[in-house]
Amino acid sequence: MEVIQDKTKVAIAYVLKEKSGRILEEIPASHPFVYIHGYNNIIPGLEDGLAGRALGEKFSLDIPADIGYGPYRADLVIDVPKEELRDVGELWLGMELEMFQEEDMREFQLPDTADEFVDGINLDRDDEDENDGIYIVKEIYKDSVVVDGNHPFAGKDLIFEVEVVSIESPSITELETGYPDPEDEEFNNFDENFNPNNDRRWN
Image 1 (tube, helix red, strand yellow):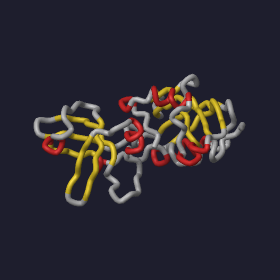
Image 2: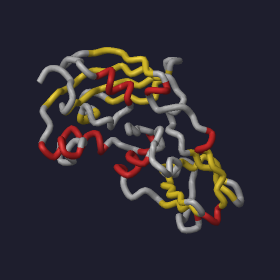
Image 3: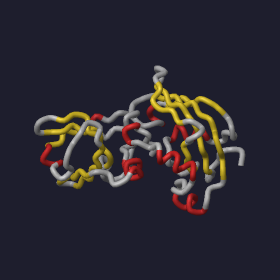
């Protein structure tokens, strides 16, 4: 398969930059990022820009915040009493917490897996509890903690310099789930290099 289209399994290498030219992330062709095209599992500006691209093609995409990681939302920065976090245990700057919020209460806990972290990031969610998701500890005070549910790239206009490394037909499982199979070698390379502190969150 030579062109990216819906229901193709795609591997890309890329350099992600801010408009200023500062590099935010680099993913080499030897350890590419792998996804299934057409399932809305990566930011819309990138997925739209990849559609129709050919195997081996290299190109640059300008992606404004509104079709990237979304606007920066002040309402996702929350001052939380430490009492609410007593079940979490030790706290540190950069720590990720998952929040569940109901009408009269909210609860924080640690994400179980990296996949849960990726799936939980707050990016223009349309569900009823739109503030549920992953929050990063930004400041720690004597009696409270400031947590931020914004993606680290929220509000940023970005530039992706992309190379299409491979285009394949996905497996039946991949078509059903919309995600690469965990046993896939390239996907394992991606997962092995995933570090929440490096901010690679594609949802």
